[in-house]
Amino acid sequence: MTDDHDRRVAADHDERTRELPRHDRDLDRDGVPDDRERRHDLTDRDRDGVADVRERRHDLADRDGDGVADVRERRVVDEPLGVDPRHDREVVVARERERFGGVKVGSAFFGWLTATGAVVLLTALAAAIAALVASLSGGVDDVVEDAQQNLDATGIWGIVILLAIWFIGYYCGGYVAGRMARFDGAKQGVAVWVWAVVIAILAAIVGLVAGQNFAVPPGSMPTLPLPEDQATTAAIISALVVAVVALIGAVLGGLAGMRFHRRVDRAGFEVASSARR
Image (cartoon, rainbow, N blue to C red; front, side, top):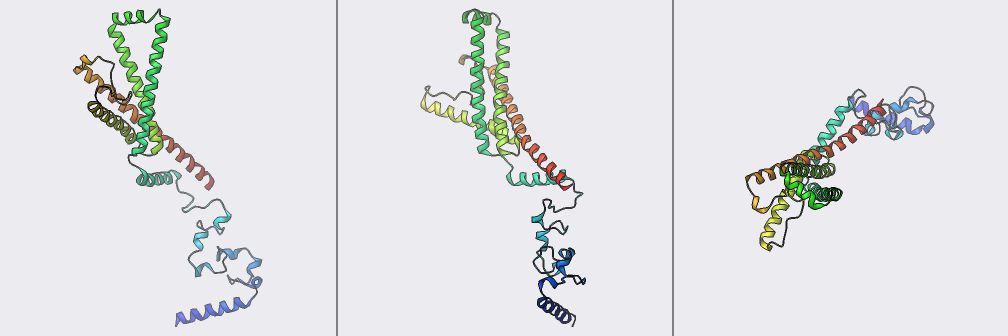
């Protein structure tokens, strides 16, 4: 009985409002025609002529419930004004990392290309500086003679320069990979280093098959400027040290590239939080 009564009341109301001109309608039944008041939009916020209580889609046009359609305002929020924007940022970044995180093989490959190029360029720069110093010091022969007389100091400086070149080169490669991948910068740096090892192994295999005319690409794998007959335990340990330094540089570069995107995210949410106020 109650449902029948409600339907009859609604039908009677629809019939009466249908017969009235638009300027005489009173959808909120407060005795004031809708075109003479401003409060009727509280019951018909999307202004489609259907009361909000009789439809479910009005909240899509006024998500913050302030009585102003979203298309007519700039501040549209889905949560209360007191929400901490840092929480929003953490949730969004976590959701993005869950979907787009992980090792990106393509980004790591381009990072390896960058690292290889940087190592080659830095090595050439170091050689050019050494040649310039030799020319200013009286000639290459004098420099070589001085180096032979101070083998310990020359070896230490050579190792330091080599470590610096590999660290800087793979830092650049890790930065490129982390910047491209956006997430998991440390993993991208490790992937850059793994690319270097894989390429060096493949080049060595091809070299064994093709003969001595094929050489490992310069800068593709940590090496030391030692004669072939000195491949001793000390030389192997030194090569491992260079490899570890390159790995550390790649990981730190990947983290630096990833942190750039975190700064961008923070800036975006700071603007959003200031707009809410």
